[in-house]
Length: 148
Image (cartoon, rainbow, N blue to C red; front, side, top):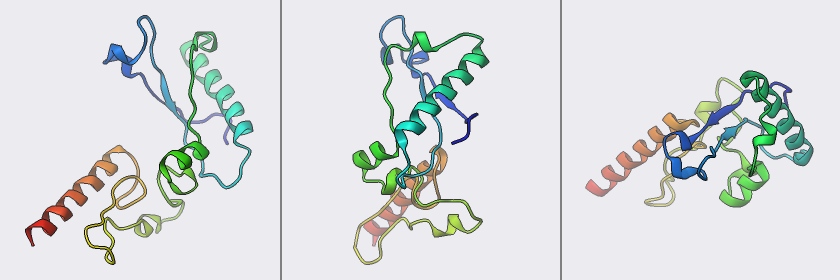
């Protein structure tokens, strides 16, 4: 893992105050990591946590670590156990080459009638806009199937 990770932060309690206890905020952050292939996740998490807190503290010019009341961590091991996602990968198979997008799972299974797939690991790929597009594609496939 890189020592200066890109960090996505979402504070939903800014719009939905009930998402956090009164007087608090819920900072949900995400750092992209590889799928689980046996890495020492406890070591990676500890190092990444330190780097993320340092980065955010530096950007805000305030030490945020003493402000943390509760934290919960999802790593590839947890993601795999909760969702059955292969090796805990959010976006499916690795997408590190120019042909990877064409290797994603299709949105349906030809050998099993009425079995459809949508989400980050199938066509077109990961990320919220494309996951939503994946759901739209599946809904259109289902509509066409029903109309037959």
